[in-house]
Length: 381
Image (cartoon, rainbow, N blue to C red; front, side, top):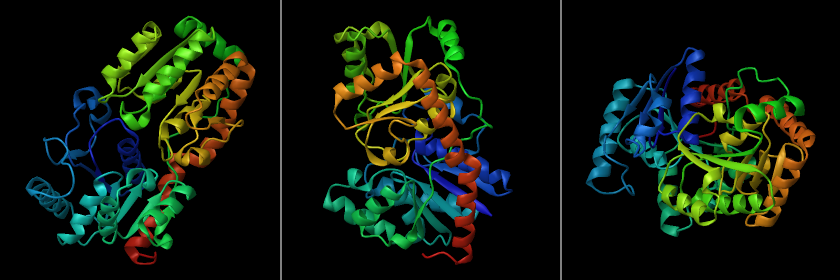
């Protein structure tokens, strides 16, 4: 089977990396895959290493097009149609964001391939304006099936767009586990801390430096953690328009010497030196980086938004805090920093549960089964 994956831009963000992992998993099944990016990333220079040697074609060297109207957008849609026709895929998988518009455009422009749209977030958070919901509903009428990452996201998507729930399939996010089954011990972790960063307590976050990720609040929380006397450091992996603001905020709060913004880097490598993974996003789907942290035996402390309640079990695989409650967030970090045995136990439980639920081999098989049924005409669509 031939699969064409549509991504917005080749960056180190969740939807794009998942498309890459899924294409590699399907290739192992003998399927032919191709990834098409709608535009070049503005942070390409810092994320190139992730995509080197990959079968990725960038449709346009220009930046992203706002909205789905105008000459530039139609020109890009026609370029996409011609490229897809040359490849002749059985199925097109549109991975979140504006790829919905392009997947729908393919059908309007005469491409006969089946189209799946992967819903990566809470639709009600991203489509608040009536005009936007109507436009997306029109696009969805051209899509054969939708994949949502959690049951809650499925319900939200169906309600937001009045979309037939029978055509929404729940398949979780996935990470390559590489057989990750080794448990951590407090002794081994504390020894690693002394070697890697002088015994300081390492907080890690990963995500685009954009307003919805709410890293500015994470920096404020970090300052309060330092005020508690916890010798912590904070590293945020990612790129985006909020970089300068975050640097300024850290300096203003007096924590800049303990704060790092190294850009896009493979999260798995950073996880090995982390004590806690922290996330203060305003909205989320099912973040792959939380799963990746669990695979590394690193507990998550996060605001309870989007699909996080179907990923992290509070008190079991991490801690979830009501959005905006900075004091409780600081308390959760302080509690786990003061009790290494508890922290390691929570991390090991996360690893055991996440490998069973989110291993990429399992997720790939779910997509392969859905694709086979969809192309053969045995799935509602």
